Image (cartoon, rainbow, N blue to C red):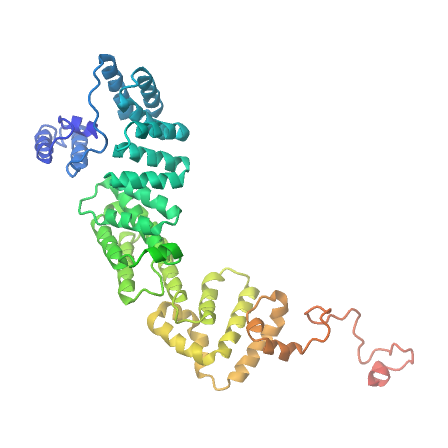
Length: 473
């Protein structure tokens, strides 16, 4: 951040008015036509600083008193600006060894170790920082990130909570805190943290949009799984305002759409998988439709358009499956057309027959529920409409059942995994009869020798044809 102040000729911590005056003064000197490269640098620095919060983005340390320490600090900052992480780390380590009283060298060493993925050393450095200044929120912040990157999730959550209570609430911190809560299923803790992120009344910079979108996706995910996790469900007295989340997401897509195009497929899939729940009403589903419309506009005539439509199709499918008014058999019939579209044709045919026979047994209930699907889930009703209408308007349901059973009896021994005989064993008894000896396998009898024809010589040796001799016996 200091580099941007340097480009504008300002000292770190300059006010917004000073930033604006410096920007307009410099672009008059370096116009896009005379010096486009310099103009681009000035423009980028202004964009980064114009909406920056007045609060510092890190701890403020006093300048080192030793001249040699000052020179080492300048060299460290140079490596940091160059993003030369190895030299940055080595310089910090040397400076801390020579000046153990300058805690800023230890702080920068901890950051450098994290950048170089020296997670074990980073944990030790951050623990030493906190030991020296337990109430420093920035040191607690580094401890939380070091624990998280090392894989100590429980310790990380405790450190995140302490840093949060001390006032550390920047977007990256809040998102990391919430993700750690999600991994540990602490949804009641993580959801309010992310709600705080999306409720910020600010203009987001281009490099912050990634954090914002990740916040939405993580929030939708936790909101969905909280309903199935009993401790979290008991802790959350009131469900998070899904309508507010979707409304803010819709506004974000409209306001920052130009930056969000690469993320559109991921957003669509998360919405499709997390915004379906039996307790949701029409208001939530209308808001989901608005979000999908916004996503369609962002990816129109692009390769991502097909992926968004796949997400929409999955959403409609899961929406009817999650509808508590629909029985398991009818939901299973819809799933066949979604999950088994690429399956073996014989198996797919068997699965359809198996479910259709179950639907016949539940005819009255199924027809009533099919009317709900036709009215509220028309996209899914199209898949099952042909058989439902046949079931509803056929005059001889017994004949339809016998017709399906004829093919089903031929396919069932090949798979033996259907629901029909399991749920309606009396139908199996009608076909197979009652078994007297369980030692025989449950499959059709296969003849071991060649069948004797009517006009073949009788095997008894009489010289007569089989039909005139032993066949009569």
